[in-house]
Image (cartoon, rainbow, N blue to C red; front, side, top):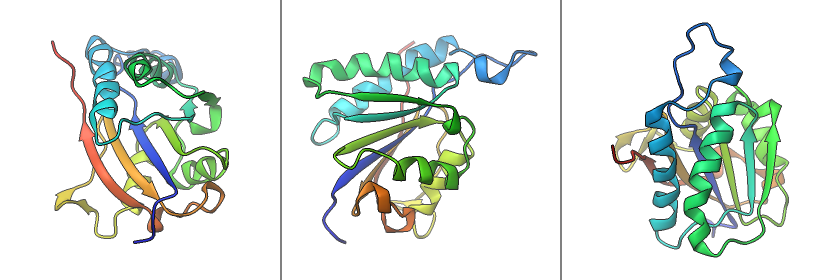
Length: 176
């Protein structure tokens, strides 16, 4: 495989409250989601070289915003670089193709790009990054609080999921 030029991190928002007639876009995190979101940040801090994202592409949904807010507090210990956080209405319930277009619009100088969004688009995009639908022999999925770390070998503007290499897929759960 070609040497990576960047790291893409796909994060599915943490567990949200049940809709119960509420507007889906405005759903906030449930108690479990508030515990799990910081665990995502701790996981990113712990893998290999700690991840320090320079560009964050967030769905405009409340649960995605809250997930980033809680997980990013755990990244503060990494001595953060300047972060550019973008809230994108296009990322809300985007398809894999829509997310690919969003990623292609990332700042070309960004080394690590984080996307916090929703299924089925995130899971579909992740599956496009795996030639046989598995990572280390396990089926690929992205439940709530799921995180995928992906090496990217081309500039962001030329991002092609099939040319990316999935390094890690983890579901993060916080303590009760």
